[in-house]
Length: 340
Image 1 (cartoon, rainbow, N blue to C red):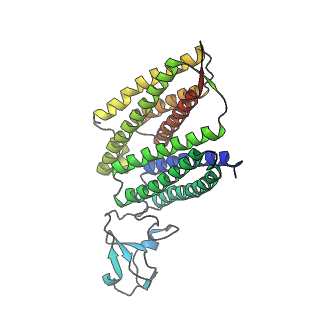
Image 2 (tube, helix red, strand yellow):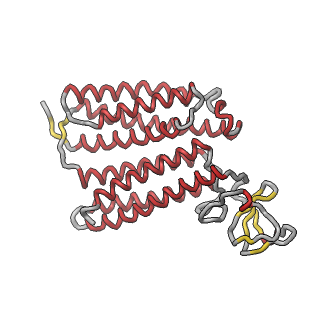
């Protein structure tokens, strides 16, 4: 298990990023309420494929916990039953956690796949904590980091339920994102402890710029979630089909988010220059610049081209990966030797 542990860490990192990707597709397609309940979907372990399955009909069998749509409201079966000719309210309980009562097969299965990715990631983290116990005697930090990551994944699962129950409250979605980044940071620390052997040259200005770059990225991500919150509110107001209204009359947070990109570019280009001139050997800097370019391009497209399909997912994923690379570069730069 010890020999396989580095691979388990890498798979765990990939699984968290896949959750980010799946979640971004859910938001991009407006599928967040594709399943009104959690962890099941309309009371099913495997979601319905047609509206007929969740519509009340006479002489039809429904199992306890199944959710139906009737008169634009959701009802939950109190027990296993076969319906009569008339709807009997005594057999059903109105679903009161929210009033979203719409079925869309595409949205339902998009949200279900998002949940399935999270479940699969959960199994990966079980292997992670099991494998980490083998290192308890020689390096307790590996076991502790693994268990903290696992419990944060459980917290993320609870947040996922809260997101659904609250009908996609933007603040909770933002917390969901931030906790995911914390998990990434913990896994990257694990990966460094287990795998990294190389010692890098230390440069004071590069190190300081890197710290500033990480802080700037966190500020930008936090502000980006606020901009996303504004877009979500616009979508609720005008409907998902009218995405062209999403950035109509944006608030100051959008302009800050857009303009702050200039500062981020300058700081990271400065890091790239110092790395090249002093031959520090940090290859991740090149990928960081590429991701900033990708972030900038997708941001421009979303604003000026009315959010083309896929740009939101690329924008979100680029930001999440950018944070991960900068954080890992910071870990690398701490294990250094000074140069003249």
